[in-house]
Structure formats: C-alpha cells, structure tokens
Image (tube, rainbow, N blue to C red; front, side, top):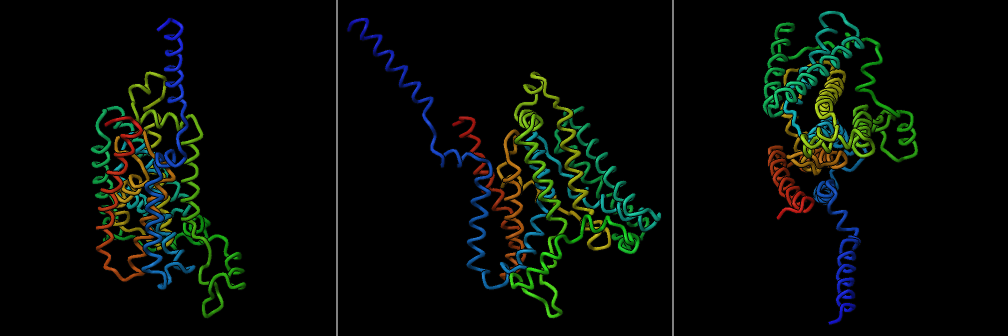
Length: 377
C-alpha cells in the first residue's frame, strides 16, 4: 500500500470519527433524558387511570378539578423549594415543622398581643428567613450533612410550636385569627379567591354549574394556586435562565470544583435554605388565614412529601440534576391521586402505599437516567 493510500485511509477513519461525534441524536432520545420525563409520564398514567375509575364521580367536574388542583398547589409551594435545594446538593427536613411554627408566629402576635395581620405576617416571614439562614450557615460552616442539621431543626421547631401554643392557649391550637385580622388585606392575599366575576360569567353561560342560590359552583381561583404558579415560575426562570441557576447546578454537582472557578457556593446554599423556609411560610399563611387558626400539627410529614415530589420530578439525591417543572408534575400526581382515592371510595391508607411505590420507582428511574447522563455502567 502506497503512502497516498495510507493517507486516504487515515482520512476516512478521521472523517468517520467526526461523523460519529457530530451525529444528531433523535428527538425522542433527547426528550427521554429530560429530568421531568418520568413525572410527565406518571401524570399521563394517573389521569388515564382515574379517567376510567373515577370518571363519573365528579372528579373531573369544575369543583372536583378545583379540589385536586388546590391540593397539588399546596404541595407545589414546598416541592419547588425542595427541588431547587436538592439540585444545589442539600436537603431540608424541617419544612413541615417550619409550616407549623410559622403559623404560630402569625397567630400568636395577632390574637394575644394585638398586632395587625400585616405586622404578624411580616414577623413570621422574617423569623422563617432567619431559621433558613441559620440552617444554611451551620451546614456550610461546619460541613455537617444538611440531613442532620435540618433533622435537628425539625424537632426544635415542632417542639417550640407545641410549647408556645400550650403556653398561650393551653391547647395545641390557637384560634381567633379571622376576628383579629379584621378588614386587613393580608387574609385575602394568602387565602382569598381571584377572578370571581369571570367565574360568575362562566356559570351564567353554562361552562360551570350553578348552586341553588344562583352562585357558581366554583367561586374563583384560590390564592394558593396563584402563589404556587408564581413561585414555581420564578424558581424555574432562575434555575434555567440566569447565572445563579448555573451556580446552583455547579454547587450541587461538585462544590469544591465550583469554588475553584469562583462560584459563591456558601451564599448560594444559604439562599436556597432561606427560599425553602420562605415557601413554607407562604404555605402556613394560606392555612392560617383560611381556617382562622394555627395548629401545632400543621405541616406534619410535609417535608417528606415535598422531597418525594422532587424525586418523582427527576431530582437526583446526589444533587446537581433536576427540574422545577418535574417537581410540579410530581406534586400534581400527589394531588390527583390523593383526591382520586377519595372520589373512588378507596381507603385512604392506600395513598401511603402509593407514595412509597412512587418513590422507589422514581429513584430507580432517576438512577438509570443518571447513569446515562454520566456515562456510568
């Protein structure tokens, strides 16, 4: 073989290698690699299942849709915060306890000290942000696992919630919030109903049913849904469209490497803990002003539901990978299944069975995706 033949053969080999590297990937393969794919598939399957089993029960009527949408929105509030924190490489197990504690920080000053609804709510948010800062600061300064730090916070906050409620009311519930709030705009901000005139018109033209008194079966869109969509949108934009989002992925993927290239890892992680407690306080404010009371058992086990929703949505337990949209899909699955079980008359105990099964399935699926992304065998 002449030298020219060797050169031609080498050129063909190099060209083939370049072609393999530049070979376009099928769109469906790219879609499968999105972190929210598993949750989206779960949403479709859940809707198909309850479409057959609960289609005639009113679950997909206007009031039924409002029920499972509201439940999903409540979980979205804390699931999107849990997701972005997990992407940053950390956990917060104190979210549920923060909900109960924030509720007490709102109710006690209003009912027993005569504070306005605005002052009490601002106090609760300031206190929650302080707790989030402390959780994050201890985690980054001591290098302790956030699992341990926030587990301690879980017990501290839950204990304080019970103790304070008993000290002031001699019960585990503090009531009288609606009376103390008076005509403040704060209750409507967190637990009000939006777009009432639009839904009145919907009932008049027959889009939704009317009650016996002529009012619409659905009064409007609950504020919690708007809060959930707004916070989820902000978190998604920050994560996918800003430099801070790149910092979050970097901090969760490899914190030391991120520090070496100038990422302010400590500030990022502390900010994420503060965002988590902020979302928990929004959740708490909605419940306090809706029910007119704060209870020491509010938010019980919600931290695990938020983490499960995030995992179902594609967040890896190891950090550095995940999606806010996927977490929202995970929360939607929760809401649909929880209310679907009620509509079909199945004992509610099966909901916990479903949560465990979904968690295991999501972890196995996400582990497979992680191996494809990282190239592990």
